Image (cartoon, rainbow, N blue to C red; front, side, top):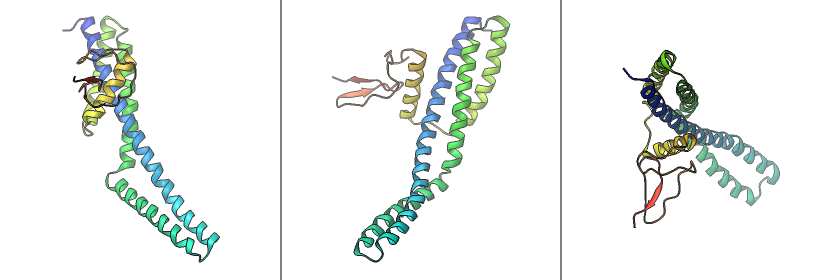
Length: 196
């Protein structure tokens, strides 16, 4: 059986992963939100532009140019709409938002558990672990890329004011630094370092 310090260490490690996961799903949700808003904007803008052009210019040569431009924008909107339906962007966005919220609550619950001792600590740790395991099972259906993991890990290190476990870099900014020529990234936190 684990003692209080071991349970607190477990809480700290698991809170880190919950925060990292929350960040990844937040970034995914924001990306889909921008795409869906852009698609909606095109869906409103294209017919409005066409109507405005015909009402303003009538049968002038200029209309042909504007019709070509709005036709291209219309095609972009159709492609985005098809992609949105095929890849279920709306449903995924809703899941990403919900998962981000739940993982953030799990992070907070682990943090709060670390302040307890004895039976209260054991009980709280057990309850949060159960919720965490259930959420992980659900989140595993949406695997992360290496870059997403680096972004999530980096954010968690930044918020928790911890150094990377692998490269031991202190994280002072949560955004991934740009990779310059002759540099490599830490596979865990994305910190860059020169290979020379």
